[in-house]
Length: 285
Length: 285
Image (cartoon, rainbow over all chains, first blue to last red; front, side):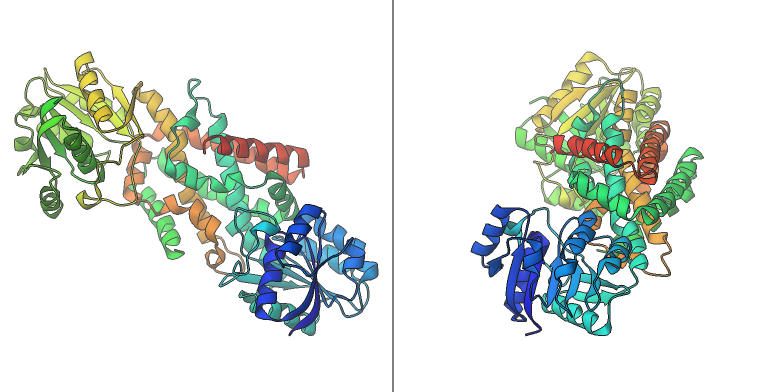
C-alpha cells in the first residue's frame, strides 16, 4: 500500500485507467471519483473503478492523500482553484495534462501551504473516451513524465513516481519547459501539421474536383490524428503556444529547404533529404 | 478473352498483380515477363504469374497486343524508347506510373506509327515489393485512372479500360495534367510533408534531447509513409515538380494561417480551423 485514499477528478480513459491499474497493483486503499458527467460516474462505480462517488470536488478531496486531476488541460487550474481551500495538509495534487509549464505555473500559485503539486503526463491513450473505455493495462510499458514545480518536494515526487511505476509506467522527471519543447515537436507539431494538411487538401481547388475522393490508405493513415478533438487541440496549442510556434517555424524552414531542392531539380539533395528522414523514421519503429 | 498476348515489363507488386488478376479473369492468353532482376522473374514464373521469361524487352514485346510497363516513373520513357522499334503494328503500350503528364508527353513522342500509348495509374499498393508480394486482388475496388495522350485512340482506351475493369478496378479517364494536380495534393504533398515532419523533428535541438525517443503510436502512424523508398519519391517529386510546388505553396499558406491564429491566441479561429479539418478527414473515412 502506497497511499490510503485517492481522489480522481475526471474519471475518463486516463483517470479511470489510473485507478484500475493502482487497484490491481494493490497500492491504494479507497478510490473516490469526481466527474461532471453523472452517467460516466455511475459507469465507473458499476465497473468497480471507484469505490464511491463524491457529489462535488470539494467534498471529494476530503481526507485524500493524493488527488489526480484528469480533465482538459485548460481546466486543470480552475479545478485546483476550487479544491484548494479543502485540501488536507500534506495532500499531493497531480495531473495528467499534455502541457506542463503553464499548468505547473498556474497550480503552484494556487496551492495552499502544506499541499504539494507535481505535474504529470502519461504518454498513453486510445481513440476512445470515458470510464467505459478505461482499462488497467493502458500505461504498461509507456512513459510517464513528471515535472516538479515550486511546491513539489522530494517526498511528493517519490510518491507520485511510485504510483505511476505501480501502474506499469516508466517514470522520468524533467523541467516543465523542457517537457513542453519536446512534446511541441513530437506531438503538438504533428497534430498541427495533420490538421493543416487536411485543411489544405480539402480546400484545394483542382478544376472543381473533389480531391479527397481520390484518397487511398496512405492518406487515411497519415491524417488519422486530424480526427482528434478540435477543442482539445485548440487548448493544447494555446497552452503551449511559444514552444509550438518555434516547432512550426522549424518545420517551415525544413519545408522551405525541401521546396528549394524540388524547384532546382536537385536530385542528390532530394535523395539526401528523403533518405535522412527515412532513417529517422525507421529508427523509431 | 480481351487480348491474346500481354507483355509485362517490371514484374513486381503492380505488374505481377495485374498479370495475376487478368489471368484469373480469363481475359488474356499468354503472359510474357521482362525484368532486370532475374531472381524476381524466376519467382514470377514459378508462381505462375507469367508463362514465359523474355531475355530482353525487345524480344519480349514481339507479337504483343498490350505491353504493360511497371517500372519507376522516371524509367518509363527509356523503356519505351528501347522497345519502340520492335513494337508490332497496333500494339497498345500502357504504364502504371503515379505521375502522368510528363510520362505521356515523353512516351507519345517515342511511339512508332501505328502503335498507341495510354497512360495509366492504378491507385493501389502495399508496403511490399516484388513478384513475391503480388496477388490478384490488389486492384479490387480500387480506382485506376487512365490518361489518354496524342497517340491514344478510342479502341486503345477501351481495351485498357476493359483490362483494368477485368482486374477489379473502377476505371476513370482524365487529362494527364488534371491527374497530376489531383495526386500532387492527395499523395505527393502528404509524402513530402511526412518526410519534412520527420526531418524537422529528427533535427530539432531541444537541449540535446533525443526527441524521437518520446514518440508514441500517433507519431508512428502519422509518419509511416516517410519510410517509403526515397529514390522513388525523389523521382515523383521531380516528374511532377510544378504541381507539387503549387501544392506545397497551398499547404504553406494554410500553415501560415494556423500559425497566425495560434500566435494571436484566436480561440474561435483555431476551433474553426481544426473543426473544418476534422470534418474533411471524417468525410473520407
